[in-house]
Length: 354
Image 1 (tube, one colour):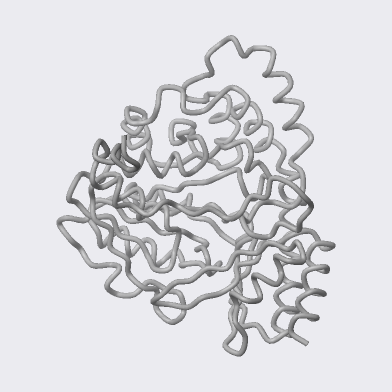
Image 2 (tube, helix red, strand yellow; image 1 turned 180 degrees about the vertical axis):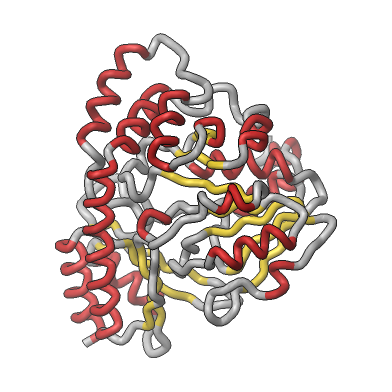
């Protein structure tokens, strides 16, 4: 059989797709890893205790709707447990939402630049995606509010990646009032920001909020996320998710994590303090740094090749993310690490820029 001949069995949409390219995950050696927005600190000790306890029941299926987690999360968020749907990471929630709302030939809208997975999800559905550039202040352009009969879902990462910027509540409510479809506010980084949008669901039931445990709760390896929406939305979305889309260990760990809000607040405090300091230091080194509300910063400059700086940092064992957006710019997205990791990174950058 000739190489590539098996491609004929795949849907044409799949063979034409560009694969998602995650940040580098080194398997060996020591490095300072600031390229995938992971939390630099270990999770709450209560998480491991809960996972060990749950491991004695692995012969059983997990709770398919994550009742214990939903109750714990409802107490923290101030919402009804029936407004919460659990997922295998927030990406799973995004997949469920796209399957549920966007049919073949229909349209999904997202801002530009933002999380590229949204485009992939549209392509899997044989749907179209419409990217609308942010305005010069990273607010929503007027065309983002436009009504369209083919539009079935809007994605709005808030805070946004890679900019770390936020859209205000008034604009989000205006958007939900303007379009005849659900508006998904992807709050992967919201714990590092001053406000969130869960309260907006009561004002407009078309608003859906997604969250992940990969960032602020330091559980990227556990794969757990959830969404918050009107109970009628959640009840129907359960038809679309996999039967057991969250396992017993992730449910136990996530329930323990969200129940330890004291750990979360201290962790967030440390990361914000480091983010503030690294923003000042990077600007002092000549980078243009956008004020971020996430656990990363976006750095650009015109006088040096950013791709070259990325490669040079990598030689020193420092991994950051070099990203190119053709209609915007290229830049380095640098995750907030520990103070020691950031100090080492800044020291190497000073040498490289000298």
